Amino acid sequence: VENTSVPAEVYCDLDTNPGLPVVQLYVMPSFFLAVLILGLPLNLLSLWVFSHRLRRWTRSTVFLFNLTLADFSWLLALPFLIHYHLNDLCWTLGLPLCTAVRMLYHNYFYLSIFFVTCISVDRYLAIVHPLRSLVLLGRRQTCLLCAALWTAALLLSVPVATMTLIQTCPGSNRTICTLYVLLNEPWQSLPYSLSCSVLGFLVPLLCICYCGLHSDRELRRRPDPHNKQLRLRRLLSAVLVLFALFYLPYHLSRNASVMVRAVYQNSPSSWGPADMVFSLEMCFCGLITCVNPLFSCFIGCQFRKEFYGTFAVMFPHCVGLQVDSVKSKRSRMTARRRQKTSAVTPVCAPPAPRP
Image (cartoon, rainbow, N blue to C red):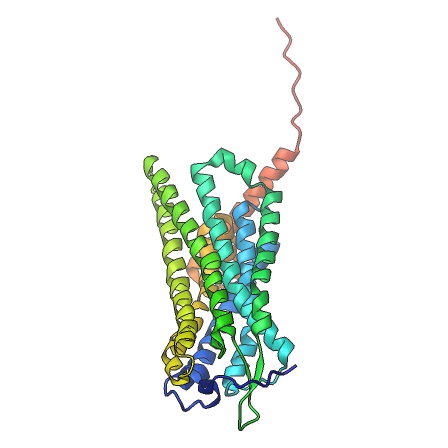
């Protein structure tokens, strides 16, 4: 059912704000297309490595697989958004698909945040509480936790479906697939946006900070002759920096856009700058789908070897990747030999006769 209420003027008359049309009609579809071209092959390759190459799955492997699956689900929404923005913000695919795309886009962000948080907690338990972690997070508990996070993210996105509308611009037949952040009535979207920011971003950020700081303190106490712990400390710091870099500006700009609508409710012309910043942040956050496969390579040693080995088969002219492919094959052959050796029961020789 199409909603006939009047949408925001800045999205019907694209000439009211000189900067917003450039972002909506040119920058966003170009950015989404670049992310799709780069992120889709990387995530498909990662899913293939997880499904066909990794024989032994650890807790980190399960979390990384779900993180890749969340990225892939977000990428599925991009072709529809690219078509929408290239079509002068005219949605022609109906309300159900409009709702599904908005939910996929919103659902991805919090799934990604949740699984990155789980990986940080897993590293913290393995470093600070190695024995207790085996009891707290077994394989069954890990799978149940991932299923619970998918369900929680889906439930968190249900209000998006109720606030997603198809609105008709006055004086034209152009219809808009609205985003809840950009609705004219902010008193429904503002509490929801703030709640998602606290539960879906601020709490995980504090959790990642706590786990990172305590893990770093524990690693500093240990001797490190081969600089392995130094590399791990740098990785934990990089996770925190990237997490804040991608998600903090997005949540700040989103809440600012909703608050501007609440404060200047009768002045749509003043919404443009906040909407433009939020639109740019929507583009920038999409880059995380290209960063996460590389993040998986740094976290999982076995995944890194298999990923490079598969990439070397696809691009055999890369010399460095050929070396990694050879190492990956050797490691797989060694693992198979060990499995065969452990599967054979040794025959005990009879005791030598005493003289």
